[in-house]
Image 1 (cartoon, helix red, strand yellow):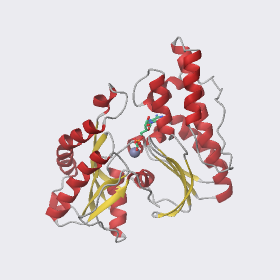
Image 2 (cartoon, protein in one colour):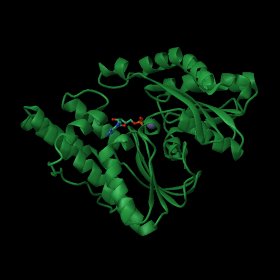
Image 3 (cartoon, rainbow, N blue to C red):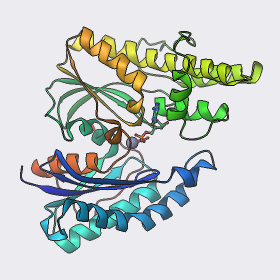
Length: 335
Ligand code: KG4
Ligand code: ZN
Protein backbone atom coordinates (compact mmCIF):
# COMPACT_ATOMS: atom_id res chain seq x y z
CA UNK A 1 0.00 0.00 0.00
CA UNK A 2 1.67 3.26 -1.11
CA UNK A 3 -0.63 5.85 0.27
CA UNK A 4 -0.79 9.14 2.11
CA UNK A 5 -4.22 9.76 3.55
CA UNK A 6 -5.53 12.85 5.29
CA UNK A 7 -7.96 11.90 8.07
CA UNK A 8 -10.64 14.13 9.56
CA UNK A 9 -12.58 13.44 12.77
CA UNK A 10 -15.40 15.64 14.09
CA UNK A 11 -18.03 13.27 15.45
CA UNK A 12 -18.29 14.60 18.98
CA UNK A 13 -16.29 17.08 21.05
CA UNK A 14 -12.83 16.62 19.58
CA UNK A 15 -11.72 18.10 16.27
CA UNK A 16 -8.84 16.19 14.76
CA UNK A 17 -6.79 15.97 11.57
CA UNK A 18 -4.04 13.48 10.78
CA UNK A 19 -1.73 12.25 8.06
CA UNK A 20 -1.12 8.51 7.81
CA UNK A 21 1.27 6.82 5.42
CA UNK A 22 0.52 3.36 4.05
CA UNK A 23 -2.35 2.84 6.48
CA UNK A 24 -0.22 2.52 9.60
CA UNK A 25 2.54 5.10 9.93
CA UNK A 26 1.31 8.28 11.60
CA UNK A 27 3.15 11.32 10.20
CA UNK A 28 1.07 13.85 12.14
CA UNK A 29 -2.00 13.79 14.36
CA UNK A 30 -3.40 16.97 15.86
CA UNK A 31 -6.46 17.14 18.07
CA UNK A 32 -8.25 20.15 19.53
CA UNK A 33 -10.36 19.23 22.53
CA UNK A 34 -13.55 21.15 23.29
CA UNK A 35 -13.78 19.79 26.82
CA UNK A 36 -13.23 23.22 28.40
CA UNK A 37 -16.09 24.75 26.42
CA UNK A 38 -18.55 21.94 27.20
CA UNK A 39 -17.39 21.28 30.75
CA UNK A 40 -19.50 23.98 32.35
CA UNK A 41 -22.66 22.40 30.90
CA UNK A 42 -21.79 18.96 32.29
CA UNK A 43 -21.86 17.38 28.82
CA UNK A 44 -21.48 18.09 25.11
CA UNK A 45 -23.72 20.80 23.61
CA UNK A 46 -24.20 19.76 19.95
CA UNK A 47 -24.57 23.26 18.49
CA UNK A 48 -21.46 24.49 20.29
CA UNK A 49 -19.55 21.42 19.07
CA UNK A 50 -20.44 22.03 15.41
CA UNK A 51 -19.39 25.67 15.55
CA UNK A 52 -16.08 24.85 17.19
CA UNK A 53 -15.32 22.13 14.60
CA UNK A 54 -15.96 24.67 11.87
CA UNK A 55 -13.60 27.18 13.44
CA UNK A 56 -10.83 24.74 14.30
CA UNK A 57 -10.62 22.22 11.47
CA UNK A 58 -8.93 24.32 8.73
CA UNK A 59 -6.08 25.26 11.08
CA UNK A 60 -5.54 21.63 12.12
CA UNK A 61 -5.39 20.45 8.50
CA UNK A 62 -2.77 23.12 7.73
CA UNK A 63 -0.84 22.09 10.82
CA UNK A 64 -0.63 18.36 9.99
CA UNK A 65 0.48 19.08 6.42
CA UNK A 66 3.18 21.33 7.82
CA UNK A 67 4.31 18.73 10.37
CA UNK A 68 4.34 15.99 7.74
CA UNK A 69 6.25 18.31 5.40
CA UNK A 70 3.87 17.56 2.56
CA UNK A 71 1.48 19.56 0.42
CA UNK A 72 -2.10 18.85 -0.70
CA UNK A 73 -0.68 17.49 -3.97
CA UNK A 74 1.12 14.68 -2.13
CA UNK A 75 -2.11 13.20 -0.75
CA UNK A 76 -3.56 10.01 -2.24
CA UNK A 77 -6.89 10.08 -0.40
CA UNK A 78 -9.13 11.78 2.14
CA UNK A 79 -10.87 9.89 4.96
CA UNK A 80 -13.56 11.18 7.30
CA UNK A 81 -15.82 9.93 10.08
CA UNK A 82 -19.34 9.71 8.69
CA UNK A 83 -20.96 7.74 11.52
CA UNK A 84 -21.90 7.55 14.36
CA UNK A 85 -21.94 10.88 16.15
CA UNK A 86 -23.71 14.21 16.48
CA UNK A 87 -25.22 14.98 13.09
CA UNK A 88 -24.19 18.64 12.92
CA UNK A 89 -20.68 17.83 14.10
CA UNK A 90 -20.29 14.97 11.58
CA UNK A 91 -21.49 17.20 8.74
CA UNK A 92 -18.74 19.75 9.37
CA UNK A 93 -16.00 17.14 8.88
CA UNK A 94 -17.77 15.41 6.01
CA UNK A 95 -18.31 18.68 4.13
CA UNK A 96 -14.65 19.60 4.53
CA UNK A 97 -13.53 16.15 3.34
CA UNK A 98 -15.84 16.23 0.32
CA UNK A 99 -14.64 19.71 -0.63
CA UNK A 100 -11.01 18.58 -0.48
CA UNK A 101 -11.64 15.33 -2.36
CA UNK A 102 -13.53 17.20 -5.08
CA UNK A 103 -10.99 19.99 -5.48
CA UNK A 104 -7.95 17.70 -5.33
CA UNK A 105 -9.48 14.88 -7.42
CA UNK A 106 -8.84 12.41 -4.61
CA UNK A 107 -10.80 9.32 -3.57
CA UNK A 108 -12.94 9.75 -0.45
CA UNK A 109 -13.32 7.16 2.32
CA UNK A 110 -16.19 7.44 4.79
CA UNK A 111 -15.26 5.70 8.02
CA UNK A 112 -17.21 4.31 10.96
CA UNK A 113 -15.84 5.83 14.15
CA UNK A 114 -16.09 2.70 16.30
CA UNK A 115 -14.53 0.44 13.70
CA UNK A 116 -11.71 3.01 13.52
CA UNK A 117 -11.29 2.83 17.33
CA UNK A 118 -10.48 -0.87 16.87
CA UNK A 119 -8.24 -0.19 13.87
CA UNK A 120 -6.20 2.20 16.05
CA UNK A 121 -4.17 -0.80 17.30
CA UNK A 122 -2.44 -0.89 13.91
CA UNK A 123 -1.14 2.69 14.13
CA UNK A 124 2.64 2.80 14.43
CA UNK A 125 2.44 -0.93 15.20
CA UNK A 126 2.52 -4.41 13.74
CA UNK A 127 -0.48 -5.85 11.86
CA UNK A 128 -2.99 -7.69 14.05
CA UNK A 129 -2.97 -11.47 14.04
CA UNK A 130 -6.48 -12.71 13.33
CA UNK A 131 -8.87 -14.10 14.40
CA UNK A 132 -9.25 -11.56 17.16
CA UNK A 133 -11.72 -10.72 19.89
CA UNK A 134 -12.54 -7.01 19.58
CA UNK A 135 -13.64 -4.87 22.52
CA UNK A 136 -14.90 -1.36 21.73
CA UNK A 137 -15.34 0.74 24.86
CA UNK A 138 -16.18 4.40 24.36
CA UNK A 139 -18.62 7.06 25.51
CA UNK A 140 -21.41 5.64 23.36
CA UNK A 141 -20.42 2.01 22.75
CA UNK A 142 -19.57 -1.13 24.67
CA UNK A 143 -19.32 -4.02 22.27
CA UNK A 144 -17.56 -7.30 21.71
CA UNK A 145 -16.83 -8.61 18.23
CA UNK A 146 -15.38 -11.71 16.67
CA UNK A 147 -12.99 -10.38 14.03
CA UNK A 148 -11.67 -12.50 11.16
CA UNK A 149 -9.92 -9.54 9.57
CA UNK A 150 -10.52 -5.82 9.06
CA UNK A 151 -14.02 -5.50 7.65
CA UNK A 152 -15.00 -9.05 8.67
CA UNK A 153 -16.81 -8.96 11.99
CA UNK A 154 -19.56 -10.66 13.94
CA UNK A 155 -21.21 -8.88 16.86
CA UNK A 156 -21.07 -10.99 20.03
CA UNK A 157 -22.42 -8.65 22.71
CA UNK A 158 -23.38 -5.02 23.13
CA UNK A 159 -24.90 -2.86 25.80
CA UNK A 160 -28.65 -2.90 26.36
CA UNK A 161 -28.59 0.61 27.86
CA UNK A 162 -25.65 2.82 28.87
CA UNK A 163 -22.14 2.41 27.48
CA UNK A 164 -19.19 1.97 29.85
CA UNK A 165 -17.86 5.49 29.20
CA UNK A 166 -21.34 6.90 29.63
CA UNK A 167 -21.54 5.20 33.03
CA UNK A 168 -18.25 6.84 34.05
CA UNK A 169 -19.55 10.23 32.85
CA UNK A 170 -22.95 9.92 34.53
CA UNK A 171 -21.54 8.68 37.83
CA UNK A 172 -18.98 11.50 37.91
CA UNK A 173 -21.76 13.99 37.23
CA UNK A 174 -23.97 12.71 40.02
CA UNK A 175 -21.00 12.80 42.39
CA UNK A 176 -20.47 16.42 41.33
CA UNK A 177 -17.03 15.72 39.87
CA UNK A 178 -17.10 17.21 36.37
CA UNK A 179 -16.77 16.02 32.76
CA UNK A 180 -15.52 13.74 31.27
CA UNK A 181 -15.90 11.39 34.18
CA UNK A 182 -13.55 8.57 33.16
CA UNK A 183 -10.18 10.13 33.96
CA UNK A 184 -11.53 11.82 37.14
CA UNK A 185 -13.00 8.62 38.57
CA UNK A 186 -9.95 6.59 37.60
CA UNK A 187 -7.71 9.00 39.49
CA UNK A 188 -9.97 8.92 42.55
CA UNK A 189 -10.19 5.12 42.48
CA UNK A 190 -6.43 4.86 42.20
CA UNK A 191 -6.05 6.55 45.57
CA UNK A 192 -7.89 3.58 47.14
CA UNK A 193 -6.32 0.39 45.80
CA UNK A 194 -7.28 -1.37 49.05
CA UNK A 195 -10.99 -1.02 48.21
CA UNK A 196 -11.95 -4.34 46.62
CA UNK A 197 -15.74 -3.97 46.98
CA UNK A 198 -18.17 -3.99 44.09
CA UNK A 199 -21.79 -3.21 43.29
CA UNK A 200 -24.05 -6.13 42.29
CA UNK A 201 -23.35 -7.64 38.85
CA UNK A 202 -25.76 -7.38 35.93
CA UNK A 203 -26.93 -10.53 34.18
CA UNK A 204 -29.38 -10.82 31.29
CA UNK A 205 -32.40 -13.02 31.93
CA UNK A 206 -31.98 -14.56 28.46
CA UNK A 207 -28.40 -15.63 29.32
CA UNK A 208 -26.91 -13.42 26.60
CA UNK A 209 -23.60 -11.82 27.42
CA UNK A 210 -24.90 -8.33 26.62
CA UNK A 211 -23.78 -5.54 28.90
CA UNK A 212 -25.96 -3.31 31.06
CA UNK A 213 -24.65 -0.38 33.07
CA UNK A 214 -27.81 1.54 33.96
CA UNK A 215 -28.47 -0.53 37.10
CA UNK A 216 -24.97 0.25 38.32
CA UNK A 217 -25.51 3.96 37.71
CA UNK A 218 -28.79 3.82 39.67
CA UNK A 219 -27.11 1.92 42.53
CA UNK A 220 -24.43 4.63 42.80
CA UNK A 221 -27.08 7.34 42.58
CA UNK A 222 -29.10 5.80 45.45
CA UNK A 223 -26.01 5.46 47.59
CA UNK A 224 -24.99 9.07 46.96
CA UNK A 225 -28.52 10.16 47.87
CA UNK A 226 -28.85 8.03 51.01
CA UNK A 227 -25.32 8.18 52.36
CA UNK A 228 -23.52 11.05 50.59
CA UNK A 229 -19.74 10.60 50.63
CA UNK A 230 -18.53 13.33 52.98
CA UNK A 231 -14.84 13.48 52.31
CA UNK A 232 -12.16 12.66 49.77
CA UNK A 233 -11.66 9.21 51.28
CA UNK A 234 -15.34 8.25 51.00
CA UNK A 235 -15.50 9.58 47.44
CA UNK A 236 -12.38 7.63 46.52
CA UNK A 237 -13.75 4.38 47.94
CA UNK A 238 -17.04 4.88 46.10
CA UNK A 239 -15.18 5.60 42.83
CA UNK A 240 -13.10 2.46 43.39
CA UNK A 241 -16.17 0.29 43.99
CA UNK A 242 -17.80 1.70 40.86
CA UNK A 243 -14.68 1.14 38.74
CA UNK A 244 -14.15 -2.36 40.17
CA UNK A 245 -17.67 -3.22 39.04
CA UNK A 246 -17.18 -1.91 35.49
CA UNK A 247 -13.88 -3.78 35.21
CA UNK A 248 -15.41 -6.98 36.44
CA UNK A 249 -18.41 -6.66 34.08
CA UNK A 250 -16.08 -6.26 31.12
CA UNK A 251 -13.50 -8.72 32.41
CA UNK A 252 -15.64 -11.83 32.86
CA UNK A 253 -17.35 -11.40 29.47
CA UNK A 254 -14.00 -11.01 27.72
CA UNK A 255 -12.74 -14.09 29.53
CA UNK A 256 -15.77 -16.14 28.44
CA UNK A 257 -15.13 -15.33 24.77
CA UNK A 258 -11.37 -15.76 25.03
CA UNK A 259 -12.03 -19.23 26.41
CA UNK A 260 -14.69 -20.29 23.91
CA UNK A 261 -13.41 -18.64 20.71
CA UNK A 262 -9.67 -18.94 21.33
CA UNK A 263 -8.68 -15.86 19.29
CA UNK A 264 -5.03 -15.08 18.62
CA UNK A 265 -5.43 -11.44 19.66
CA UNK A 266 -7.53 -9.28 21.94
CA UNK A 267 -8.05 -5.94 20.17
CA UNK A 268 -9.24 -3.06 22.36
CA UNK A 269 -10.18 0.50 21.43
CA UNK A 270 -12.10 3.59 22.52
CA UNK A 271 -11.73 6.26 25.19
CA UNK A 272 -12.35 3.91 28.14
CA UNK A 273 -9.31 1.89 26.99
CA UNK A 274 -7.22 4.79 28.39
CA UNK A 275 -8.10 3.36 31.80
CA UNK A 276 -4.93 1.82 33.23
CA UNK A 277 -6.78 -0.53 35.58
CA UNK A 278 -8.84 -1.87 32.67
CA UNK A 279 -5.69 -2.40 30.63
CA UNK A 280 -4.20 -4.43 33.48
CA UNK A 281 -7.31 -6.61 33.82
CA UNK A 282 -7.36 -7.28 30.07
CA UNK A 283 -3.66 -8.02 29.98
CA UNK A 284 -4.05 -10.65 32.68
CA UNK A 285 -7.05 -12.27 30.92
CA UNK A 286 -5.26 -12.32 27.56
CA UNK A 287 -2.18 -13.91 29.13
CA UNK A 288 -4.18 -16.70 30.73
CA UNK A 289 -5.75 -17.56 27.37
CA UNK A 290 -2.62 -17.19 25.24
CA UNK A 291 -3.94 -14.21 23.26
CA UNK A 292 -1.89 -11.13 22.45
CA UNK A 293 -3.36 -7.98 23.95
CA UNK A 294 -3.46 -5.21 21.37
CA UNK A 295 -4.42 -1.87 22.88
CA UNK A 296 -3.30 1.48 21.45
CA UNK A 297 -1.37 4.06 23.47
CA UNK A 298 -3.80 6.51 25.14
CA UNK A 299 -3.36 9.15 22.39
CA UNK A 300 -4.89 6.70 19.89
CA UNK A 301 -7.58 5.44 22.33
CA UNK A 302 -9.28 8.81 22.69
CA UNK A 303 -10.85 10.37 19.63
CA UNK A 304 -8.26 11.09 16.96
CA UNK A 305 -8.06 11.41 13.18
CA UNK A 306 -5.09 9.04 12.79
CA UNK A 307 -7.39 6.04 13.28
CA UNK A 308 -9.76 7.51 10.66
CA UNK A 309 -6.94 8.04 8.15
CA UNK A 310 -5.59 4.54 8.86
CA UNK A 311 -8.86 2.71 8.36
CA UNK A 312 -9.70 5.01 5.42
CA UNK A 313 -6.43 4.01 3.73
CA UNK A 314 -7.31 0.34 4.27
CA UNK A 315 -10.77 0.87 2.77
CA UNK A 316 -9.41 2.72 -0.27
CA UNK A 317 -6.78 0.04 -0.84
CA UNK A 318 -9.61 -2.50 -0.90
CA UNK A 319 -11.71 -0.52 -3.37
CA UNK A 320 -14.16 0.87 -0.83
CA UNK A 321 -14.58 4.43 -2.10
CA UNK A 322 -17.38 6.76 -1.15
CA UNK A 323 -18.85 9.17 -3.66
CA UNK A 324 -19.55 12.84 -3.18
CA UNK A 325 -23.20 12.21 -2.35
CA UNK A 326 -22.16 10.33 0.82
CA UNK A 327 -24.01 11.46 3.91
CA UNK A 328 -23.49 11.43 7.65
CA UNK A 329 -25.52 9.01 9.75
CA UNK A 330 -25.89 9.68 13.52
CA UNK A 331 -26.43 6.02 14.41
CA UNK A 332 -25.33 3.10 12.30
CA UNK A 333 -23.59 -0.24 12.65
CA UNK A 334 -20.47 -1.10 10.70
CA UNK A 335 -21.29 -4.79 10.34
O1 KG4 B 1 -13.74 7.18 22.40
P1 KG4 B 1 -14.04 8.43 23.12
O2 KG4 B 1 -12.94 9.45 23.23
O3 KG4 B 1 -15.28 9.12 22.48
C1 KG4 B 1 -16.36 8.37 22.02
O4 KG4 B 1 -16.25 7.82 20.90
O5 KG4 B 1 -17.33 8.25 22.80
O6 KG4 B 1 -14.53 8.01 24.57
C2 KG4 B 1 -14.91 8.96 25.51
C3 KG4 B 1 -15.28 8.23 26.77
C4 KG4 B 1 -15.86 9.15 27.83
O7 KG4 B 1 -17.05 8.56 28.30
C5 KG4 B 1 -14.79 9.17 28.90
O8 KG4 B 1 -15.29 9.36 30.20
C6 KG4 B 1 -14.16 7.81 28.74
O9 KG4 B 1 -14.12 7.61 27.35
N1 KG4 B 1 -12.80 7.77 29.30
C7 KG4 B 1 -12.45 6.98 30.32
C8 KG4 B 1 -11.09 7.29 30.62
N2 KG4 B 1 -10.68 8.25 29.74
C9 KG4 B 1 -11.74 8.51 28.94
N3 KG4 B 1 -13.14 6.07 31.03
C10 KG4 B 1 -12.51 5.45 32.04
N4 KG4 B 1 -11.24 5.71 32.40
C11 KG4 B 1 -10.49 6.61 31.71
N5 KG4 B 1 -9.24 6.85 32.07
ZN1 ZN C 1 -14.58 7.76 20.07
